[in-house]
Length: 242
Image 1: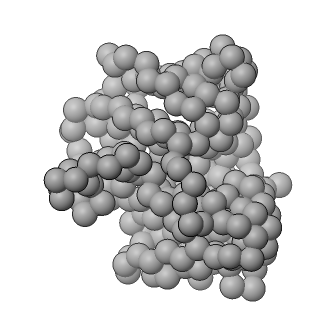
Image 2 (image 1 turned 30 degrees about the vertical axis):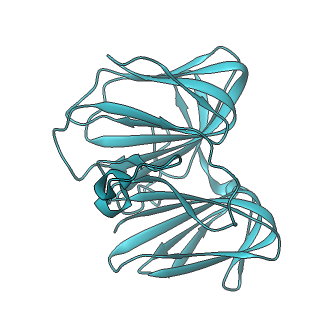
């Protein structure tokens, strides 16, 4: 079963002076038809002006993953040092048992970002933050940006490589694919999962359905997914418990 969310149907929320485009209810955007998708609670698109800061107050039991689409920012959890993130990179704020606040400050060229809030499965952990730089160009397939599955942690195998996913408290995955036109990317998961696909740029097809830039698709009960690029495309995929 697939439910398509078109870009022009997204909601708008106002948070700390920013107007965010929202896939699910957030702040002053309330939509009973779009509360969450499984354990994916928030998916927001935002833009910060040069030198400006987006601040959130106290949060707990959620992993906030920020993917920088363009520009640069510095992410900082309360009590931690700021960490710079360039375009294509990821900042994780794992709020654990509770943090007083999180903020993101844009660089000289500003920043646009896509932010995912994943409900944690492990409660009461110590708040922590992580960053990863942009991934090197791959073969067009899905590459993990973040994961809460131990088998995806290179430290479990004793081999830590550049580009390893940030470690989530949520039993979830966030993956990225840059797919050349005419090619495809495949992803497999287990039963009891929800997949949420966001088209960052380009045009893709999933089965007979066409999705353009800004569109998204929620797939419930799917264990296998194939995305075909009709035009060069960048796609983000979230895999969460239903």
